[in-house]
Length: 307
Ligand code: ATP
Image (cartoon, rainbow, N blue to C red; front, side, top):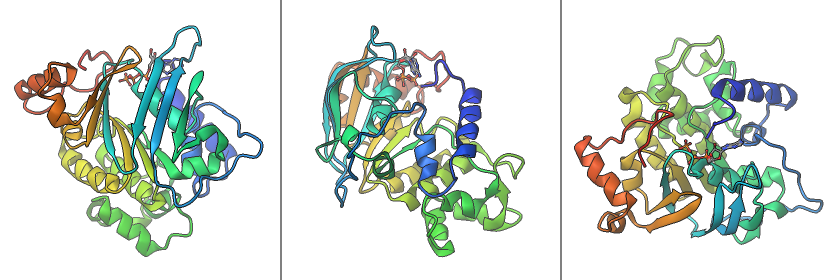
């Protein structure tokens, strides 16, 4: 959610941060993940490897203003490898929930754990290497496609970058660019569509191999034309990883192992989509509404009032 700081502010901020950060390797994600400076605890340790990717919220309460909690007493265990769709009205706290995993913010009370380790005890580098957030729209540097994707893992070979692009359903369009992988994109570079940028972001994330994926409305900036490709690429990206997907797309919710509905900062529904649809709750209402809308939820305009 970008309520108080619009997308332009975000870009200015990110640009500013990037100038200061050496734009190398995983720091890209670190920088993109860090709207607020949380500090690393003295003696923080890397997450023990291999990272399984279980995510647990334990009685988590959080508010940007401590007097007004956005999330209240949220307890959730997401087993390693589970794909969870997070639904809820605008402002319900979905993006906030994601940001707590990578310590964009820390809970006011309660704990967030990965593999049973409190994220506040983990080095930020290790945390943001194992848990990666893919935003609605992705920042591309003024650089080649190759380097934009390789930022995720500087030691990756061109072949590995190509493999990631292929898996992200991006290789065909990249090869059709004027200089192929050497085409300069980003600011003042070749303009890419939202769907193309998102597939580059997916390739970048594939290369980083995170155990935990945090996807914030990953198809909302995507044109209808490439949506199917993005959805297919996301599907491959999420396979074998823990994934928390904030989405207004019913197709993404249906494909999840589990759907969580957040309302007023609390989890009000939690279960496999096939079971929730037989109940009389918000998810079932959404399914009914979607059937009338041809499988597509009302779009993600800022004033939407859909679930
Ligand atoms: P959306 O579907 O619109 O993205 P959301 O469910 O993701 O909504 P959040 O973005 O988590 O909701 O926001 C939850 C509440 O916290 C909202 O009332 C929002 O205005 C507020 N909020 C979000 N980000 C900030 C921030 N950086 N500073 C202060 N308040 C914020």
